[in-house]
Image 1 (cartoon, helix red, strand yellow):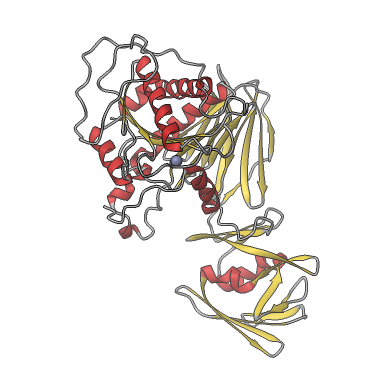
Image 2 (cartoon, rainbow, N blue to C red; image 1 turned 90 degrees about the vertical axis):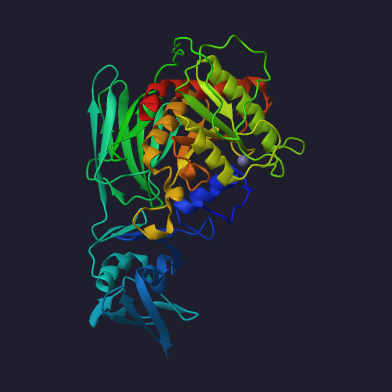
Length: 486
Ligand SMILES: [Zn+2]
């Protein structure tokens, strides 16, 4: 267990930005271009520097993540010795202002002159695709215009197939697991692959001749592959087969709550920190509640932690609690039992939140945040620390979410679809986020940003109610699956 427990003092919108930066390790400045390099054990980015009107990269920058680099100036010459991890050293030599040099004892002609600046050696980006393999002894696939360089046999291929029917669906199968960001907006669904060495061996533009799945497009922009599906109806993406298959189907129409036989109310969960609360809105007659289905709603922050400043007067912790109550009420109205992890303005640590959730054995954990950046909704699933790499460092506690990630993504997809149906902008993406990764149940975090219509604001009853209804519908559509998983 993490004894160095820190309150979540930054809010998710900051985390959202941090997650994007973390997912694409690009960048000191936004305007500087970077090359994304995918190697068998690592993904890294190399800054690109314009020189003589061409793109250049520091040769040591490009090699350092792959081994040990020693470089030195020797008069006008620049000498480099590279030792790949577990391999034999390779020497290279270039001269400032000259386009000829040596790598591994062989002549190497550059497409532009070598540059030496402050002891650093720069070569044209164009040459990197043929030069790096000489150092590391791996094959390379260089997509220069897309700023992507794939070293060794790391590529992930995919296949797309439209299965016609009522409704039609698009099935994407990948050669390795993928974890793209899913963005839905009216008329299209986008999968953004920020970490995967994805390549497309088929055509980039496909007209399907289908009315539901009209066309698809693959592109690589600034090092990031993106797959877009265009449709006349809202779409949703469902991940199966350990994230090797993504099925894109029309979002389910707004579902009516399934009523269940009347049963006595469930006993309170076996935890002292978990409390229930009564909704603040006038209670409608609740539908019968199933004791086997429990949603834990966690209003983030509270007490000493106020979260983001939504406005000078409105604190995030209060918005989170108000929305959590609304959502609890909405779920109960649809016959789903829901409890709140905090019902007052008290401070609760991240570990305590995860422990309380796990001892309640819920069907779903839902963390609620609010932000004043952007618009609409962001839905987060846990981005887990990689398994296998330094696996001794990651205790089961850090991996608690792993077996539930598939279902968590499916819940995120289902809620995204309901929000899209209501014309609310939504982005779903994985993020390295606590306590999601410590929760041993399907788990997502929601972050509510203000509506596009600024007049109402984030605290507007109609806006929050619309979102709460969409989230509850998205959960209702997944209820059977979530129950089956317990
Ligand atoms: Zn927050």
